[in-house]
Length: 136
Ligand SMILES: [Fe+2]
Ligand SMILES: [Fe+2]
Image (cartoon, rainbow, N blue to C red; front, side):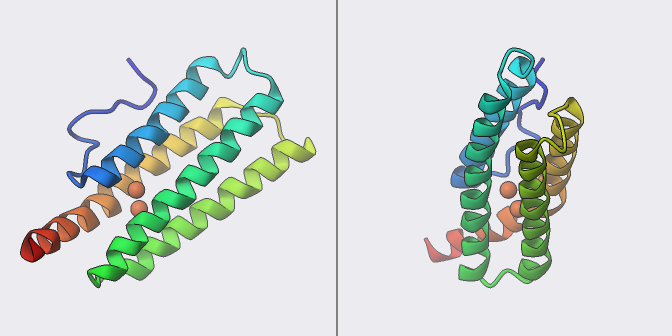
């Protein structure tokens, strides 16, 4: 069983969003499996890559929400922004040696990711799908 399970419960039925989520889930699962054999530099490099994926992904969702005037846009974006700030803080602490990488980080990533997906992304994806079907 993977650290983050990918199944029908974690899909939101908007293909672009699902595939971005899946890419990030794969990265986190790999980090969970292999962090004990990765060097600190390698872990930081992976986290930088994940940060770029997250930024691009949040941009994608926000772009959809703006395009279709999703009413929950502001609170959804605030959650993204807060998560990115905390993620960057964590990388900075690892780089400066203030913190050592540990599994708590991956646990909180998973909790946030699944919770956000269930509460925010699904709602927004249903809205996007409806709008796209109207436009089709
Ligand atoms: Fe989101
Ligand atoms: Fe998302």
